[in-house]
Length: 260
Image (cartoon, rainbow, N blue to C red):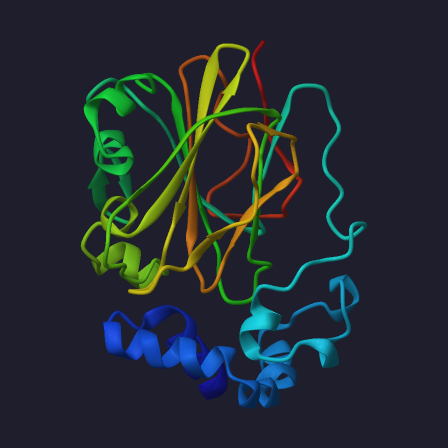
């Protein structure tokens, strides 16, 4: 229990810029490899899913951003399915009435705050928002939940605060204030925003996808440390997922049907 709390402190709870810098230096240094086996054991990582044997990861950071075997996360092939972009917890989901806030852990948000402008937010009036939280135990690569065309991609925010349960409850609206990278995907005239929220003072969102088209399940990027993905769908694109919240989900698992 003490060891798990210490690791959580390392990867989630530091919100001081200098501490974050030191953490990144340590996690990327070869000496941190000594902790790979302990980290794997503490958080119950499944070594059979990993693309490479644990001995091949040269640092704690390499283990944290590990890729998985292609067979480890099959992508749902149901026609018109929208899949989870990450392994994580479906923590919240809400219908978005125009101009109405939605609540996450007792804090009120608006899509205008999250996307950075009224112009960007208006397109999503009456739509659906889903919040997916990643813990240190989760696979930290981010994939596209749907096939479509990337219409726009932009970044917002500067300093980042924790996005674990404590951070979401007591932080300064981290989902709309933290550093975040927003990818807007167009699907047959409708839009889906994939909001990748950083968790620490340093930039923890790394993009790996290039090009205008993206396929369902294709990698978009990864988090260097624990974080959150928010999906914002345009009105009449999807309904609420038939799942309890909070609920564990796997990347590639069907969340909901896309209305055509």
